Image 1 (cartoon, rainbow, N blue to C red):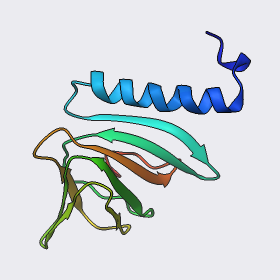
Image 2 (image 1 turned 180 degrees about the horizontal axis):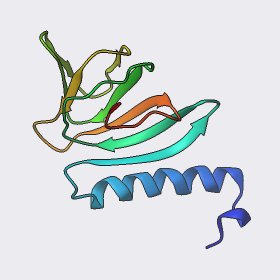
Image 3 (image 1 turned 120 degrees about the vertical axis):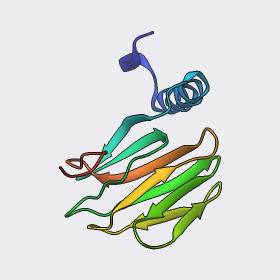
Image 4 (image 1 turned 60 degrees about the horizontal axis):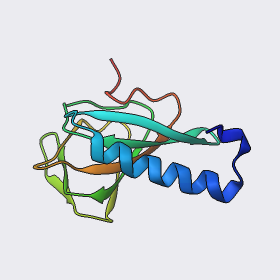
Length: 119
């Protein structure tokens, strides 16, 4: 199937089906895939567990599609995101994402951000 021959509606449906198939087949403990770019930002699909990290100059947005995402904030609280809940981690905040079960999230962040944090 050649994507350039699909109508706009067919292409949207194809991407939605592809996304569902991708999530179903993913067995990785950490998976991060850029889905699209919108201006200077990207929308990423994440299936994750995490490590402590921070982004010095960018905020990051997490939105839980399925499962439960825990965002540990260093020396502070843990934010719990259930299905269809979102949270912005402000730039410079050291954080770690983790999940008690397979969890699927959308992340919105600037295109140049390193998903595992600044070195």
